Length: 106
Image (tube, rainbow, N blue to C red; front, side, top):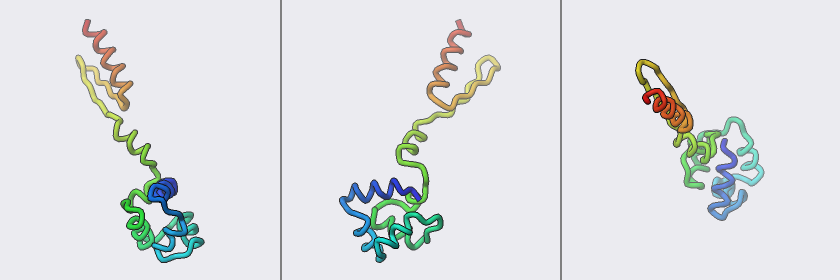
């Protein structure tokens, strides 16, 4: 589970773990054990997602929201110029390819 996301959402809502646990119908100790669980039940994940107002997948995805944002800004580029194939996975690589092609085209 993405514990950091869960803790951030709890703080964002101005709640604490005891309150979340109560809303989920469990003790604070059970809630803490649930957070550390490697195999949480779908029922508990669903209850937590409802309380926090997030999707179930966001609870089990280990990527942080920042990682997801960074990934969404990545590019994949395939360029062919005069029979030569270039690929880029970042904007920096793409710009390097563009500069190389500019120098060849002169």
